[in-house]
Length: 124
Image 1 (cartoon, one colour):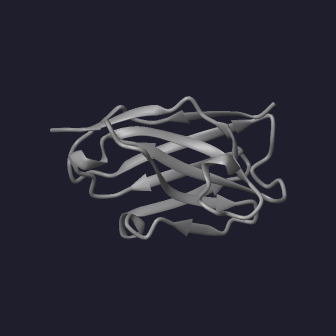
Image 2 (cartoon, helix red, strand yellow):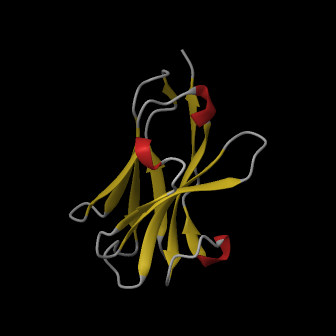
Image 3 (cartoon, rainbow, N blue to C red):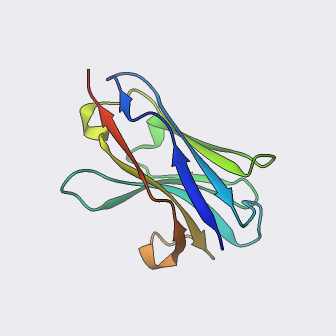
């Protein structure tokens, strides 16, 4: 049973960098044919995919966020991390990490495990 847990600050000031970590247990982030995504949901809005890193470390970003986003991993800790730079109040959201299967298709049905989410508020 894979478990995923997000961690990071609940409150970030505008223009700062948000850093979130997802710790994975019960499965390796280097397991073949999986990718590991960050996804968010702003208040009153739908899910928005942010980025993924796959089992060989390849990264892909949502074009609308790519200029401010970096995803990385620490295989020794079985963790992957999101950095979102120059945040604004529009980045206030519940942030989730999730595991996707197979080839990335931006289809929510491809995700089989999710973290519980961590609420991030951007405010001065």
